[in-house]
Length: 282
Image (cartoon, helix red, strand yellow):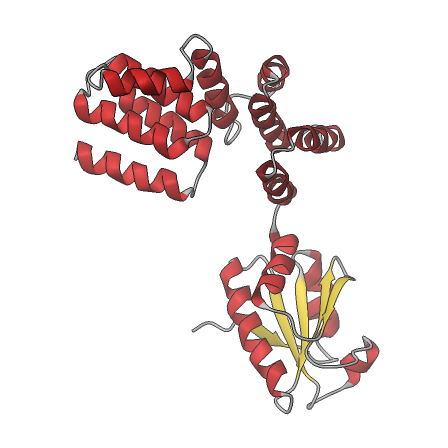
């Protein structure tokens, strides 16, 4: 197994930590075998760092071998972490921390600005606070007008908020080949289409009364997706695919694909239904 940490000494600190930190963050861990919890902590941290694909490096200093660096960086107890980036100490963690805390630290060091913003956004959007989310994203776009990822997120939140005119304006400013642009685009198209359909409750009743009417089922799938009832919407679209693949030029399958785009890469629900769709077609 490849080592995920390297040994730091006073002799290599300048080159292996300070200079190397210009290209990626370096975690410096102070530990000692004589302090069992720090040795265990070192193992946990090495395992975690190994999961970040080389985006961060871990240097370890055994204070039982040499206390020079620990004294220089004012380490009071073990374990202790100093985070060095661009030649400066940017963070520190003294004492034991659990895996969740360590992962948060590593995420903050390795995520792109867009990823970090998305993590914050997810928490805000989970509470339904679209106004705060829009304000945060507009500020991000103003600060980094060239970051198309921020514009994609802004357009998506504006659609979810129901501010379709501004969503269209933002979408028009995003180049067609921008990653994930199809997410707000598809969401907007679903909302625009749903506006011409009966409401969700009425469609549910109609489909129950006439379960073989695929047009009603399609309208129901669209309303379910707009209402963010994604599993129900995917199942309804899947039912159309199972009943008649030729209906409206394979609209069941195409609706599922558009919903997958909204859910995003790596989404468990999208993976589950993508597999169902694949199994049916093959």
